[in-house]
Image (spheres, rainbow over the protein chains, first blue to last red):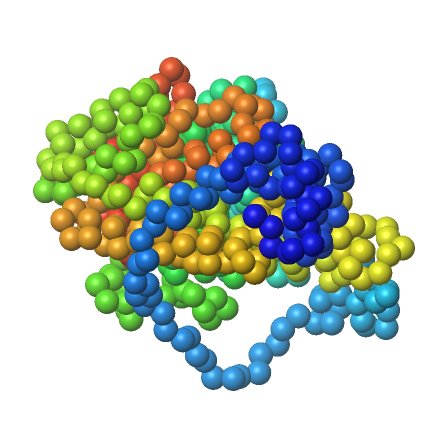
Length: 110
Length: 434
C-alpha cells in the first residue's frame, strides 16, 4: 500500500506489529506529512499509523459504490470586471508576524 | 452562570443597528469563531489563529447587525470545524448545559450551548457534515442547515467548500427561521450563492419565519430505514414517538429506502479531508497566523509552524486528505467518493418524487461523555452517519428537539428538497407544538 517504491522495504518491517490488511506504515505517514508540510513527533507518527489503518480500512467500503453518472447543475457565475476598493496595505499586513517596507517577510528560501 | 460551560473563546460586543425594526431588533447573537468579525479576533478554535483579528466582517454578521442583532461573543468550536464534540478546540472543551459531564456536540458546540444556556437568543454555526444539527440535537435546541447556495459564506474560514453552509441556531423553530430570513440571499462576494428568482421551483419571496405555522395536514413524511438501523434504541423510540405525533396532526408517513447512505460517512470524510488538505495549506505563518521560531528554510519553517499551530485532529485530516489525493490513491478514494456523492444525491431526488420531507434521528447516539470518543477518531466519524448525507446532497435540513431519553435531549432531523426550507421549517414547527 505504498505509493513510492523506495518506502516499501523498511516500511513494511516497521509496521509489522499489529499490522492488518489496510495497515499504514510509519514511513508512509512521514512521507504524507512531508508533502503536507506538517512536522510530526515520533510518537505522533506511531499513533497516526495505527489510526490511519483503521480509517482507511473503513474507507475501503467505497469499492462497493457503483460508478455513477454525475449530473451537476453547475453554471459559471460571471460579473463585470469593475474596480472596487479592497483591503488597504496596512489592513492586509496587520496580521503578519513580520513585515518590512510594506511587504510580508517570509522564512529564508534555502 | 453557576457552571462554566466554556461557551465563548472571546466575549466582545458588536452593537446592532439601534434603529432597526423587525424580529431581530434587540436580539443577542453568539457567532461561531470561524466566522469573521471585524476587529474581534477569530480563532477557529486553533492555536494557529489565536491572535488573528479579521480586517472585515462576514456578510452574515453584517446582515444580522443591520437587522438590529447585537453580537455578544465568539463561540467555542472544534478546531477549524473538525470534530463532533467541541473537544478538539485549542481553548478546551465546552460543556453541555443539559448535562455538564457530557459534550455539547460539534463542531458548533459553543453556539448551541450558548443558546441552551440562555447566554444568547440566537447563534450562528457552520455545517459541513452536521456541525449545526449535531450540537442543536445534543443541547436540545433548533439548528438549520440551509441548502447549499442559500447563505453567503463570505468571511467564513473555509474547511470544505463544496459541503459547508452557515446556519442559525435558536431556542425555537420560528426564531431560527427568522434569523435565516435575515442571513439568506445572494451575495456578490460569494459566487456560490443563488438568486432564488433564477432557481427553478424555488420561491423568491419565501418567508421562513411565516412557514413555522405547524400545519402538517396532508404532508408526506418519508422514513428511511437506513437512518434508524444501528441507532441507539432510546433515540429511535423518542424519534418514532415524535413522528407518530406528526401523524396525529394529519401528516402521512411512508417507509422509504436510501441505500446509498451506507456509504455517506466514507464519502464525506474522503471529500472533506481532501478539501481540508488544500484549504489549510494557506496557514504557513507568513501572511497571518502564528509562526514558529525556526532557523530552517521555507519548507522547514512551514512544517514547524504547522506542527505547533495545528492540533491532532486537524493534522489527521490534512494528512489523510493529502494521502487520498496522492498519486496512486486518487482514483481509489477521491473518485469513488465523488461517485458515492452523486449516488446519494440521486437517492434523495428519487425519494422526493414521493415524499415532502424525510425524517430520522439527527444523531444516532445520545451525547457522549466528555473524553469518551477523543482517542477513537473513527468512532467519532461514525456518529455523523445521519447528518453527512444531507451535505453530500446539498439539501436543507433542520434538527428540532424530539424529546428526552434518560434525561438527555434527542433531536429529530427533517430533510427537504433543494431550496424548500419552508417545508422543513413547517414540519419542524409541528414537532415542537405537540
